Image 1 (spheres, rainbow, N blue to C red):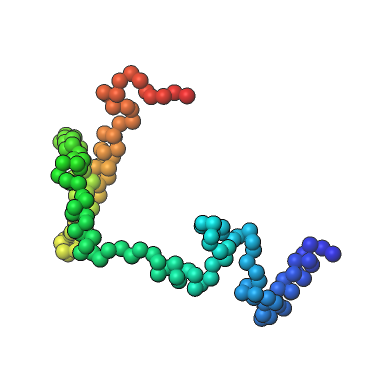
Image 2: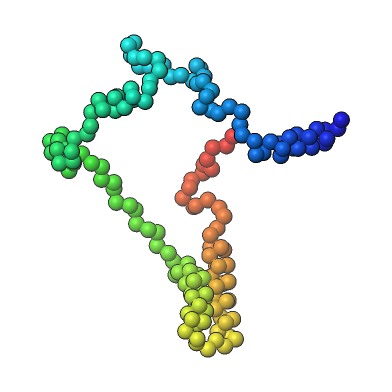
Length: 163
C-alpha cells in the first residue's frame, strides 16, 4: 500500500463521517483532576457549584457610590500642586539655512502648483509643467545631497563601541 492510498482512505473516512453526530458530548465527560484548582482556605470544599459562586458574589464588598467616593478621594489625595513633575522646556528647533528652505519649498511647491492648477483648470503650458517637475526633482536631489553621510562635526573622536 502506498502512502497516497492511505491518505485517500483517510479522506474518504472523513467525508463519510461528516454528517454523523459525535459519540460522546463534552458535558458527559468528567473534568480531569489535574485541571482542578485548589480551593483557598482549609475549610473550603474541593469543588464549587454555581450556587456557591453566586453566594460568594453576594458577599463581595461593593464599591461606594460615586459621590461618597469623591469625598473620600478629596480627603485622602495629596496636594497635587507641589508633588507633580514639570518637564523642562524643550530645546529650540535648529535653524534651517536658506538652501534647505528653498529645497523644501521646491519639493512641495512643484506638485502643489500642479495639483492646484489641475483643480482650478488653469492653463498649463509645457514650460510650466517642466518647471514644476524640475522643481520637485531638484528639491529632492538637493535635500539628499545636503544630508551628508558622515557623523556630525561635533561628535568627537570616539565612534562608539566597537566589538
